[in-house]
Amino acid sequence: MTHFLSCPCGVAGVTHVGGNMFESIPTGDAIFMKGGKVIACEPVLPEETDNSRRTRALLEGDIFVMAIYRTQGRERTEEEFRQLGGVAGFTAFRAIYLDPFYAVVEYQK
Image (cartoon, rainbow, N blue to C red; front, side):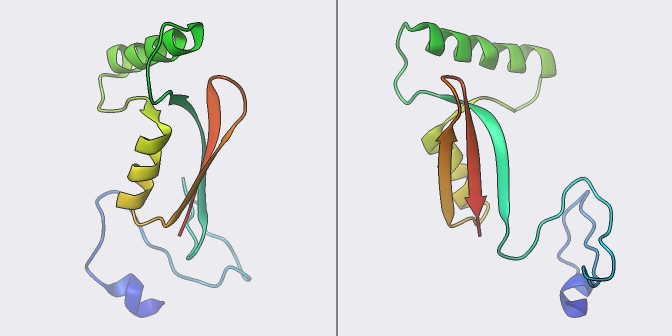
């Protein structure tokens, strides 16, 4: 582990911390473990848009995010979430729909 942490292949804003998790767990905004999962609760757009209340509400939320936060963030379809995880190196993906708007999206290495 020490070899990995000493490599110059860092990412801006990311600090790699080594240690023994059975002794202490370091603090941080996110902790990723080898072979671990990333789980998020996100609104998921339908693959095909229609004139339903659900689709309209989700698209209005997308416009709100773009207008208020002025970022490149946006709402995504299930397939776009799947592709996003694949690009990040995750091999397993599933979406569990909680209600008409939100799903728990799970990525696993």
